[in-house]
Figure 1 (cartoon, rainbow, N blue to C red):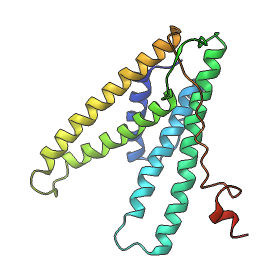
Figure 2: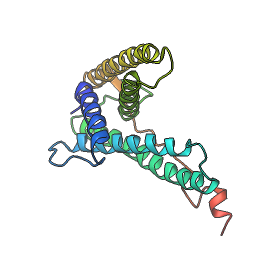
Figure 3: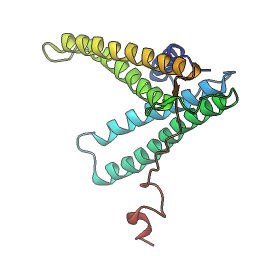
Figure 4: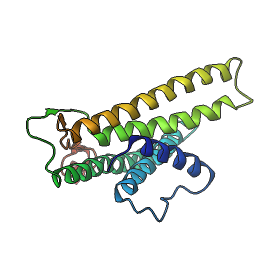
Length: 198
């Protein structure tokens, strides 16, 4: 059901693909879980580039406000998809009588780790771009080579951690549960800025 190496490779592949052509979900995947992982990665991809728009020098207040609203919508989708990943895994485990109730609870869910891997994939891609940027200041290439090395180590470590966690869950030594983010900023019934305007 879950292979961290496969997930990380898919995220890297999609990151590269989406920087060359329109960022759309690939068709034809037989694996529903990997489709959700891809959709979650797409939300991070869109979020990364939307946040760059908010940092554009000379952007008007109106433009920044529009981008902020877009960021909130994308971030909500990103979080919803993290929860969907976790729900799918928990449902799959439950159908196999896992996890055992006495297993130690792991506080960080696979979905949250997959989200972190997604962000690392984007950082690695953009750092690689900076390594090759001819207009960079002195020492720029070397600084980014070191940055890329560190990010690659972090990605490898996180893949290992996710695989180890999943194996421990399958062996009944660890358990996971769904942690809802309970975001309030997009909910017109919970955010006073939104319900106060009515």
